[in-house]
Length: 227
Image 1 (cartoon, rainbow, N blue to C red):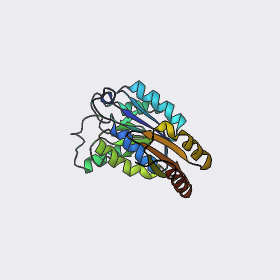
Image 2: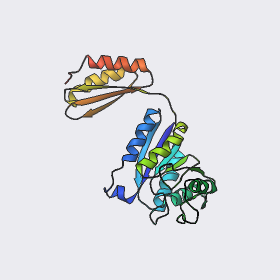
Image 3: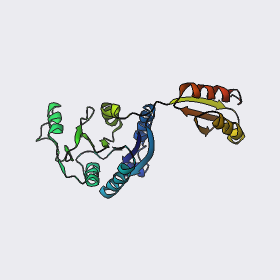
Image 4: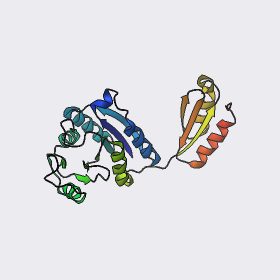
């Protein structure tokens, strides 16, 4: 399964808010064996939201969108999703019923709070108010991290792929000095290799066979200088 993650918000592009949602989602998806192929941030603009969703839903098994939910002037994500899918926005009776059960009167809700693309499956917001939605492989989640995480947990089982295994090796050598050993490692073992320099170099091995990953890690540990 491959997925694209789209985060929405002018504040993200202006650097006023750190995009922790994308990082968290990528971790969760990777742990489930799902390949995240794209992470894209778009402004609070219907045309940009619709264009990116249209492009990604054609390329990937699912698109997860976070941010821009609610009834305020800059909450345009549902409108963008509806435009991408050629749907109208309409009040969702099940979402309204959930909100009433949570103590919100329909008369007290700001207009547009429970508007979702026609035909969407509503995703209840256990940690907030604005509902999410799922439709045609597009999943729309809130931007508030606590709300996003709680809502993702309700749909997490819909994202599954091939189990992957990881091992990390730390080398106290320059990254450039490790190139020959990494090349030999790739020739010997069916694993992917990532190299991340800092005070030392962290080499991460990943593969779908646990024994192969463990053997590759053992082979490399014997051939690098440890901190």
